[in-house]
Length: 411
Image 1 (tube, rainbow, N blue to C red):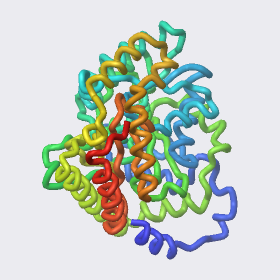
Image 2 (cartoon, one colour):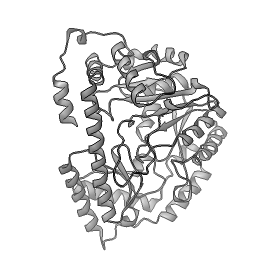
Image 3 (spheres, one colour):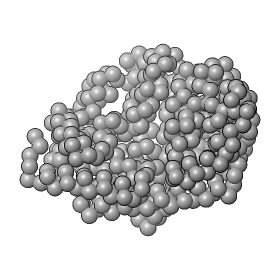
C-alpha cells in the first residue's frame, strides 16, 4: 500500500504551523480527536474513548518505553508469552532497564499459547521470578499476535485480566495489528479480533491497570513515520507522569497532520483499510498454499498481521522432541536470566544458523524463531506483506535452498 499512501500524502499541504512545536508534546487535539473516533468506530469500546485519555508519541516503541518508565523501576520485569516480538526487549530495557520476562508454554508438550491455559504458565513464571528477587510489574499482551498471526478470544483476555488483578499487575495490550485482519477461504473459523477496550472491566480488574498501545507503523504501513499512541482511560496519575516526560518522545507536527488527515478522510480511510485487508488475505493464502504443497507445517488459523509462523524442523532434520525436552529441563532448573538464553539445543542452533546462511547466500531472508524466543529450533516467520512478484521471487529462492538440502546433511 506504499504507492497509494505516497500518492495520497503527496496531496496533503505543508503549512506554516507544521514548522512549529504545534499544540504540545502529547499529540495535537485534532489527532487525538481523530484517534478517538477510530477507536470508537473500530475497536467497539465498552466505554467511549476520549481524546484526553491519550498520549501520542514518536512510535509504539516510545509508548512502551513511557509505560515502563512510569510503572516500573530498574530491574523490575514484565511478563510476556513465547514466542514474542523481540523488539519488546529494547523497548523495556534500553532506557528504563526493565527486564523482559518470557513465559514458556512448554512447546509441543505444553499448552496452547493463545489459550486460557497459558495463564497458569504465567502464574508459575511469576512465582519463579519473585523467588529470584525480580519484582514483576506487568504483562505485555500482543493481540493480534506477532509472530503467530492470530487473535485472542474474549475469554482468554479476561483470564489474563483476572491474573493481573490478582497480582496487581499492569496489563499493556499491544493492538498494533487491529485493522490488519483478514478473512480467506481457509480461515473462516478463526478467532476474530477482540480489543481489550471492548470488555466490561467491572469484576475483572482495577481499570487503572489496563492500557492499550497502538500506532501508525503496522495498520498504516508507515513504520518510518514514527507515530504511536497510548490509551489509558482510567489511570490519570500514570498519564500525568507520562506527560511530564513526553517532550522526549514528541511526534513531529508533519506526521501528526498526515495521520490526522488520513483518519478524517472517511472515504479514503475506508478504502485503504478494505484494500489492505484484501491484499493481506491474498498474501496469506499465497504463502500457506506454498507451505501446504511442500508439507511444511505452520500455525494454522491465522487471520491477522503480515506473516505466517512456519515450522521447518522436518526439512532441517531437527529432533523436535529432544529439543523440547532439553528446553523444558533448562527452563525448570535455571534462573530467569539463563532461561531466556537456554531456549534451544546446540545441534538445533547449528542447523538453524546453517539454514539462514544458505538463505542469505541465495538472496532471501526469513526471520528465525530464535529472534522471537521460540521454544525450539526450526520455527521461522515468513512475511507476506509485499507485492506478489517480490513474494514469489522470495519463495522461489527458499525453494532452491530446500531442494539443495535434500539428501545433504547440514550437521
